[in-house]
Length: 434
Image 1 (cartoon, one colour):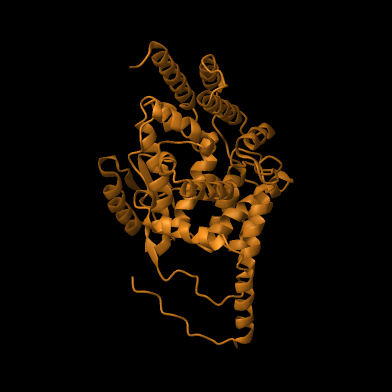
Image 2 (cartoon, one colour; image 1 turned 180 degrees about the vertical axis):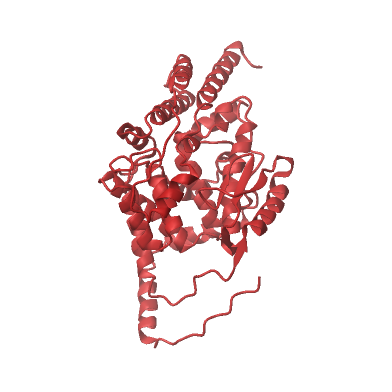
C-alpha cells in the first residue's frame, strides 16, 4: 500500500517535471537562430564574396530562468532522480542564456558548455571530437584508391519521396503519424518535427536518402517526441533541449548505421563540420569556412548550408560559432557502446527506455527508478531494429565474437594474399533495377 510519504515524493517529482517543461516552452533554439532564405540568395548572388548578414529575434530568458529557479526550490541533488532533475534545470537555463546572447561571443561560451567543442576531451576517455573527425577523414582518404562504384544508381523526386514517406509513417505511427508537406523553401532537403516532415520541392534524393530520412527523422526524432508526449507524469521528457542533443542525434545516426543507409559522404560531412567549427573558433570567418566546404563539394548551395550550420546564432566574422554539430560523432560512439553494453548485460529494458522521450544516456538510472515508481511509461513507438532486434543481435554477436580475439595474424595473412594477387580490371556492374 502506498504511504503518504511516497505519494508526496511522487507529487514533488511531478511538480519539478512540470515546471521544467514549462521552462522549456519559450525555447525553440534551431528556429530562433534560423537564417531567412534571402540571406543565402544574396550571398550566392554576390559570388560568395561578402559576409552574410543574418538577423535574429530578441529572446527574453527571464521566464525560463524564473521557471527553473522555481523548480530548483524542490530539488535536492543527492538522489539519482534529483541529480537527473538538476541536470535538466542546468541545461535549460544555459540554453535560455545562450539564446539571449545570439550574435555575440557569449553565444559561443554558453554553447560550448552545452554541446562541447572540438578540442575538449570526452568524459572517461582522452578522445576529442576533433580527433574522432580526423580519424574518419583519414580512414576515408585511405579508400580513395578503391575502384568501387559509390555514386547513386538513380535519383528520386521530392514528390516521390514524400509519397513513400507518407505511406511509411502511416504504417509505423498510425493515427499519430506526422503529416508530410512539400514546401518551396527549406534549409535542407527535408526537416522533421513531431507533427510534420517537410520536404523541399525540387530536391533530389538517392535510393538511400529516403530510408535514411525515415530511420533518422521519423523512427528516432518523431518517435521520441511522440513517446515523450505520452509521459503525462513527466512532461519534461517531451521537451528536447541542449542537454539531450548528444544522445538524440547519436541515436539518429546509429539508426542510419544499423539500417544500412549511412554512406561515406554522410560520414565525411559529419567530420567536416567538426573541422569547420574549429576553424571558426580559431578565427576563420563565414567566407573562409564556405570556401573550405566548396573545395570539398564544388556545390555552392550545399557549401553555404554547411557553413550556415557552423555560424547560425554566432559571429560571422569568426571566433564564436555554434558548436552543436560536434555531438553527432560523439553521440554515435556513446550510443554504439551503450547498445553493446545493454546486449552484454541482458538489459533489453534499458534499450527500450532509450525511446521513452527526449533524454540523455546519463538519465537512464533515474528513468529506471521512475519507471519502478510508475511515473515513467514504456515507449509506444520503437524503431524496427529494436522492436524486431534479430538483425541487431546478429551484428552485436558478431562484433563481440570478432573483438574477443587477436585477429592481427589473419589480417597479415590476408594482406600477403592480396600482395600476391595481380590487380585485374573488373567491368563496372550494372545498377540494380529501380
